[in-house]
Length: 179
Image (tube, rainbow, N blue to C red; front, side):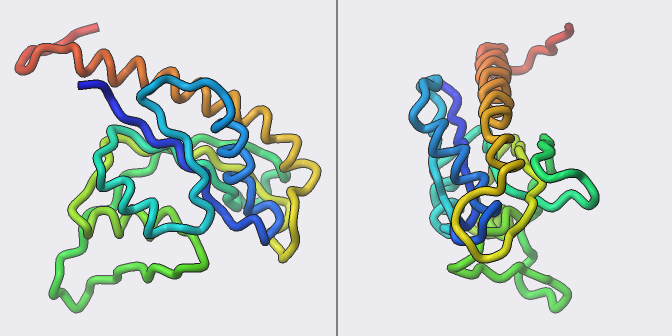
């Protein structure tokens, strides 16, 4: 069985640099990628993304604008967050993020996925420090300049993921692998 990887650009193109993930995904979608990789622009469609992930993916690469404190606009980072556990239904202390049809939060998507009974083995986020996320169309100059490097980073991640997943799939069950 071949691995499945979803590469999802997220963000709101009506809020300037928040459209970074969408811009990267749209460019990547026109480039050759391995057959096991699906590249999509999810924009602000968090519910759609959560349900798509329920179809069974080994890895998820999210591309998004994300504030990183005092970093200069256009700064890129790769993060590997832990997937949130499913909420224990019935506990008063449970805080389940609310899904809003007009926003996209990776935490809300992943929590929704877990609550739907789905999971993803590996999650990577390629984030970019925005210059502005105020209402407006188009990326700021420093964020637009980061798109090409982000495409390179995502392409490298996809190559590594495909290799890792294929290697894992070829390992006999129950045997220890040492390197």
